[in-house]
Image (cartoon, rainbow, N blue to C red):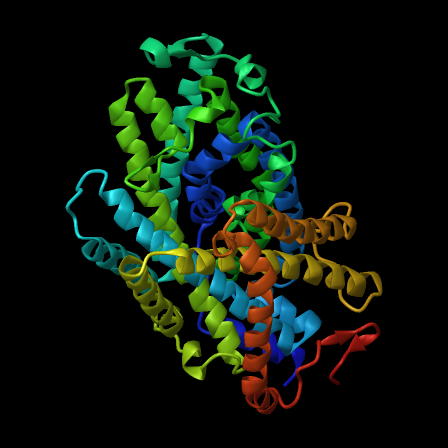
Length: 502
């Protein structure tokens, strides 16, 4: 089997049906999710206005990541994405680990999002059974994904329209309130909006007194990474784009501007409108979105309801993306027998339906287990998804570094969309991801006086070795099948002088 045959086989059966408007909105939607609408609440409450610095810095790293991924995609667009690139540049073992880590990320994230939909719906229907909400939400996204890639893209397009629309409305209202120095609320809780709130908040811009710590905004960057996760989904969608050479550069280059406007712009206005300490409250055990808090204090209860509805849309969008990506990743793994061969089956409409249905079963099982046995075990499992996305981002950076080494040696033709200042930007990205894991361990250790409540610490110090053991055991279980299926070609496809296999 030649290199061309091996990678061409991964794309057989897919339909290039994602058009320009769908691709651009998928790229926007991937950068806007519950990490902004909901996750920013607790981070604001514990770090103050300095959270703006955290989101901006991690946004630069996210841009480095997307430029590295863009260079790889314009070299070879594939629905296997980083799994396929890991296979080409580092061998079958690397593809196996990358694929299953990405599947783990989306499997656990999807379970959490599905559980969250049940909680969000109770905002209107407190007596709605959670199991019924879970079934309805999962059925909707499952049907969409089984129809076609175009159906997936269409759902993401309209979901992104709603998410972007809600943020734009907030940005307009926020600018008017801040520029006009308008008072928000009434009575003792009233507060006047304005730029001065950046430094006149309790503790100033970078609070260090009381419950605040000077290193808080630095350590929280490990959590901000996960707010940006899913932007790498463009790499998987590229395999089904009508014109990836035209759409990918546009989507990638726009990432930094979208992060600056939607994330940093929103955080800036939030801390200018109200003291950061008012954010992070919970109702019925569920975090309240900072946008809901702001509109609620302004007396615009209907707008708070709209944001609550957008939260459900954001969670459904994440579920939709999870099924889309895991179906294609499992198929890429199945092509080399690193996943059950049945995962390679395609529907007439070009959908890897077995992998999608398999992941949906995991979603359903996990959501019901979470309802039945809520507790720390599920929190630990969810944080394991964080470790998985760190690994996948690291894999993208590593693949781009290796690809650039090969192009510099003339072994491979250069990509038409080369990352600027590379490979140094990818080295910086890798170093930052190491810091993220260290930050998780440190913040996890400080989070509680009880050992088994130090969730992030447990995930990093105990969870990573456990994951490593499971992956090694799994590799040895499938290794013989992989060798037989690939005619022994499990090493990287290229060495420093040319093809590894003649």
